[in-house]
Picture 1 (spheres, rainbow, N blue to C red):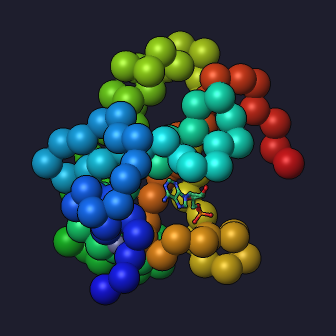
Picture 2 (cartoon, rainbow, N blue to C red; picture 1 turned 90 degrees about the vertical axis):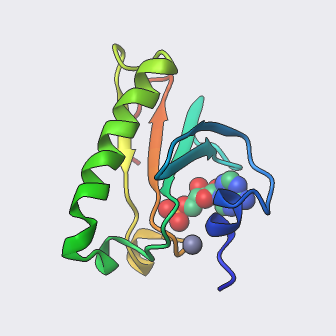
Length: 111
Ligand code: AMP
Ligand code: ZN
């Protein structure tokens, strides 16, 4: 499968990795829209939220705990941040490997 986020998770493609554990990798978005813009991905390939299965429920809970930990260690937990999943074409999802956007470092407006 030719998935760029699987390749990043396997270190076959370069990325600025800021967090890694057994199940997840987080790295800087190549085209940031906020001073802090990270993508947190499961190492397991899941195409999108639409492709989640019951067996993924623990993994998804752990994904939010990883996001909380990363926000804390990156110093934005107190000021706040935004977590976003894009799902499918109307959302503009460009990479078909489930990823959680972690955005912060400024006051974020909806646009
Ligand atoms: P989405 O629109 O939710 O699919 O977001 C995909 C995100 O991945 C975009 O914000 C891109 O800037 C980012 N992106 C695409 N390729 C790379 C890459 N090789 N390294 C880091 N971020 C990437
Ligand atoms: Zn993948």
